[in-house]
Length: 370
Image 1 (spheres, helix red, strand yellow):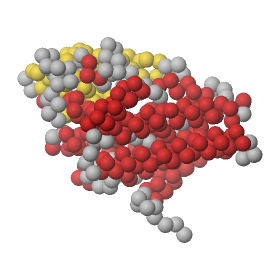
Image 2 (cartoon, rainbow, N blue to C red):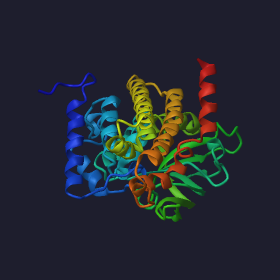
Image 3 (tube, rainbow, N blue to C red):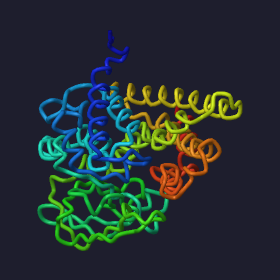
Image 4 (spheres, rainbow, N blue to C red):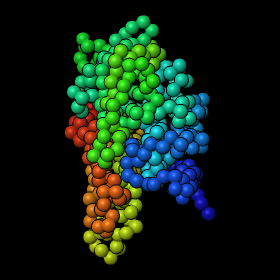
């Protein structure tokens, strides 16, 4: 006999497990690490959408289930555990939808949210720039007011999935005369707009998910401003708490951890200790992710908790790979193996979403405010 889990997510978790098992058995995907970023499969995302598994925490009027962020966390955990290819909808579901819900106009909500829920809209993030590094407030892409909207010029880099995206979230400067943190605004831009060009950046694995995006006199309609003009910095810091506080910050390498659990020798004291330590840390990180989701349900933007989760989660993921190097047999250390793919992807773990130094500084600043 099965009973409902304390947080009310048992049925939802079972639904996701059943779907991912069916697709694996049918050979429709191969589980691997980092598939939330590298595994683009629009058909799989469409299947999730048909089962109302995207935007589960959003109001029903926009196609969601009207559930909680904790329910969304449960869905995300199960997809990550399965190593499923979810890159097509991940950014839209994780942070763009919640940001539009909090700051978008009624028109923007009605235009954008149903498209994300149906997996018709694929989002990428236009934040980082070649000369800005980890200093997001130093972006120079400029949006100039014109009749009926804005004209955008500049470029973004390390834009994951831009070559597949239908829309881009764009952080741009709208006032050059004020302090850099005060002159920023957020936009939702169609990738099919005239003046946008996308160039590939091939990574060490030989794969392309990074891109450079150039904006050359790109017109953005006035209603596509997200929130208030000039309030972009405050809004993006809040939005980054959605990005940094999710389970992908510690479950990207879960397929490798699952393999370690399969092959580790219980009689090997060293392996037993390493596995025990990893499992204990995983339990702690899951609890922290639950607390982040609970804060979001309460209407907060858990900036400090999310930065802490990402910082600790990155270290955990790298330690999973280090344990795998010693516990898995040599035959599973090839570049084309489960571990090999994870190792090649791992240099990006500590950079995307904010480098360690940025996170520590953010944690310290937030601590002073409390």
